[in-house]
Image (cartoon, rainbow, N blue to C red):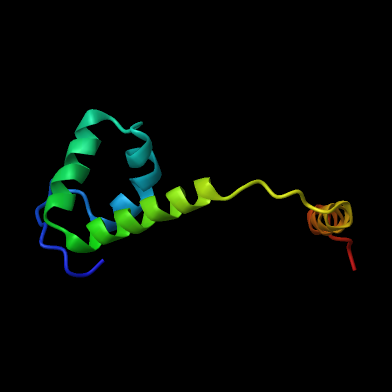
Length: 91
């Protein structure tokens, strides 16, 4: 992410934040890693925007209701998945 004002060898990079974001938001990261991310976010507006977008996506997905998949669609999806997982025949 461009626009980051954080710098230094011991700091976490924007790319790493993207990779750790799920664990960060779930609170499952070790305290030291969480502190590094918190410090980075304080100086990186692009990462703040990315995190806010990620949170918004999670919130929107939680508000969606469960939708029943029609049985014919289930059958077709299963057929496609089974055919894509089948071993390729020798030619």
